[in-house]
Length: 428
Image (tube, rainbow, N blue to C red):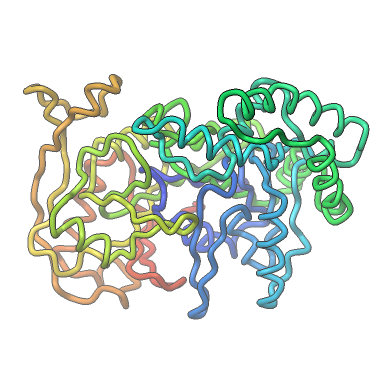
């Protein structure tokens, strides 16, 4: 079982960090292949909580080589802050590898992200303001800065000059901001070079050599399917491919080397930021899910929007990603709900549809069609086998599995590292 991809099946925050950590002891490499420090993973180990934003979750497993792939955009200051924080808590981070082809988030990317979002007013997308989108835009426009450029001052200066020649006009003439000096950007980036040098390399080659040697590689997606720039709720999406296809382009490993595709899905639904959300709740049940599930962003601290489970979205994620296994998280949050609604289809202007509409307008106007399932009151946090779950919890899981397009192989029943029910082997 040499290679597996792990992605989110909803709008993010499904608990991918926990799923990655669950698999971490069985894999040799964990690769982050998209996004930047605009997403967060929270992992609880021995009562200790670790919040990661840029680093792969596998960095918490001592035998794993964590890799930041070429599809990631890197804020180097954030990278060093996270490494320093982990080292201060006694963790070894010396195995980290960073692709020489990964793009660098600079000061001007963060500035443009914030001023552009404010400029949009009511049309705001809800970005984190961390420079992710502008960095990906520069990548596609072929004016980006890559990690390898930090080791050649001449090339770095030329690229920064080229980027700022256009951006300063935009900042000064459109947004009424000060121009950014070339020297301040170059000097800052050069100051990172020596510490970065041992980490940076040809990670695509290293990963392929690892697979050739029979090593097991896990590809960890940031954000989630419904935030994918191609397949999500555009334009309310992230700026990268958060689906399984992004693992290929974001790492340099070919698709025929991938064996398993694991998607993480909550037992209900959440999202952060603007955009359509058919099952969103605005009543006491929304407050219940927010408080019981501690639904506040790991990266931003923003309160998440909450809603009931959306089966059409799960089916969509299964199809787009080629999901072989689902990991269902936060089932314990639903304990005490007498009747649990599940969205089984949508009502779009009087027409019932059971798949996610391709039209943004139709999806925006889609109203959930619910089916209710009996809940349970028993504490499930101590369950470690499927049979130990209450009968109604078992029925709920089986119903979701039948609706969602792939088998549910693991179930999260609490925040702790070992609070999980394994139904099937995720790597077999």
